[in-house]
Length: 147
Image (cartoon, rainbow, N blue to C red; front, side, top):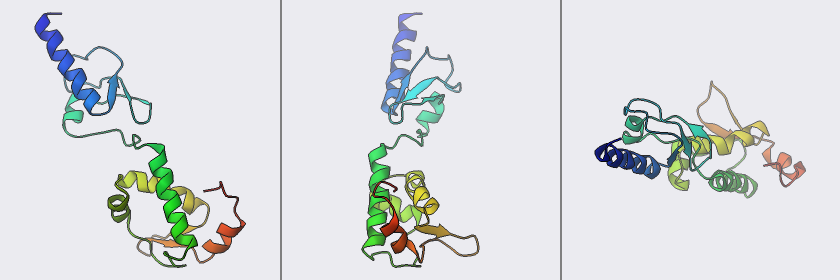
């Protein structure tokens, strides 16, 4: 590899690292090809292309776990203290994402266990996510680490 190509490859590695990826192999030779890289946020092996990284694409799982758990705890606390009343709509995913400064995907990840446990529900024939009418009794009967 010529010194010019080495410098160029080092710049590509810097771009990938700045985007939250640690390249695991040599540069694939083109910006369109997937480049095996480990996401520094979630630790999983991904194959982003340099072009997709330049376009702003990031690993959707890269939000730190503690942020997702913090959103989940905050929503649970708001149900418990009555901020989110029984059978009322909670703010939309984009609104919560702005409030907690995370992605909408992270909001879905935080709310999904609350839906599975029966604290929240959504139906196709109605808009939005709502607090289940029996959420308080379910919270009282649940183990502290369930959510």
